Length: 204
Image (cartoon, rainbow, N blue to C red; front, side, top):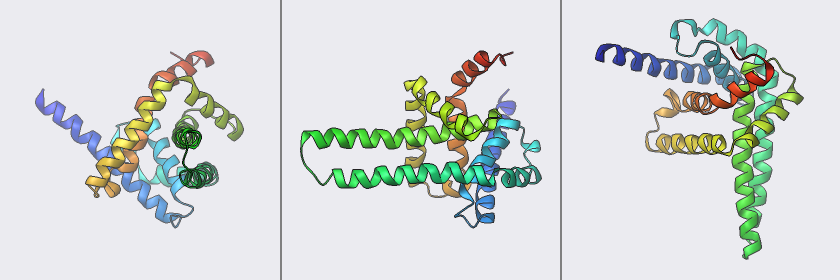
C-alpha cells in the first residue's frame, strides 16, 4: 500500500517536472518572446490529453502541438499581457492619489487584474478541451470566470501560493512552477467543466 502510494506520488512529481521542462524548452524554441504563450498552451494540451500517464507525454507530440498552438497561444498570451499592462499602469497612477474614491478604484483595478489572469487560465484550459473559435473561446472563458466566484478565488489563491513558494524556492521556476499552475487550474475547474459537458450533452 505504501509502495503504491509512493509510486503514484513520484509519477505525479515526474509529470510536473517533465511538463515544466517542456515549457522551458518550447519557450526557448520561440526565443521566449513568442514562445511562452504557445508553450503554456502546449503543456495544457498534453496534460488534458494524458493527465499523469507520463509515458504518453512525449517530446514529439509536444513539438507538434507547439507548432499548432503558435499563433493562438501568442494571441491569448499577449492579449492578457496587454490587458494586465494597461491595468497596472492605471493602478500606478491611481495609488499616487489619496482619497476614499481612489482607494475603491485601486481595489477594482487589482480585482480586474486577478480576473484577467484567471480568465486567461480558463481560456488556455477550455481551448484544450473543446474545438472552438477564438471569439467564442474568449466568451466562454469570460462566462466561466463569472459563473463561480469560488473557482475564481481557488485559482487566484492557488497561483498566489505557488508564486510565494517559488519566491522561497527559486528552483521551482525550472522544475515545477508553470506546470503546477496549469495542473492547479485543471483541478480547480473540474466541476465547471463537467457542467459545460452536461449542457453540451457530452457528459457520460
